Amino acid sequence: KQEVTQIPAALSVPEGENLVLNCSFTDSAIYNLQWFRQDPGKGLTSLLLIQSSQREQTSGRLNASLDKSSGRSTLYIAASQPGDSATYLCAVRPVRGSTLGRLYFGRGTQLTVWP
Amino acid sequence: DTAVSQTPKYLVTQMGNDKSIKCEQNLGHDTMYWYKQDSKKFLKIMFSYNNKELIINETVPNRFSPKSPDKAHLNLHINSLELGDSAVYFCASSQVVEGYEQYFGPGTRLTVT
Image (cartoon, rainbow over the protein chains, first blue to last red):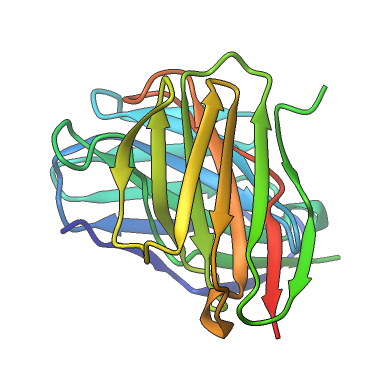
């Protein structure tokens, strides 16, 4: 069964810092990996989707990498801002089969960026 | 122009009642999902429908029954509500079952007293 772990569970940094959020998964047979952001009391916003054949994806100040063989992904946030404060969730989608379509989520990294 | 919408946003009810949560997506997606986020913020899939057909049914009590009247709607009906059902329920959709981004609704916070 796929298990997704995110480290650290919480992170507090001053504005302007570059930071890295880590995600690891136990079964490397994934179809893709998706990073989400969740603000308090809100739904999930998709940030980046990396297909299993890709190594990284970039969107603005965000860069996500994927090393499928080692079961790891990182989300890099450049020049952090207070508006980046949220919980960041990593989710993997297994390959075809009985687990078709589902996402397995980590428990998230709660990020606080202070001015 | 909301992509995935859910109603109600908040639901407070007593044990033993029956309630429904509605979900609609206007993205033209063919697959919809229900997830449960527990008090520790852990998200876990409950159900998935593709073209109105149930394709994922996790180990969920049969008090929970999803219904998909058409591709754009996936409702969740819960019978005989229990205290442990209190959670945030998220609806999501994707273009194709595999490999496409999932888009989430704003969530429905269910509180059972």
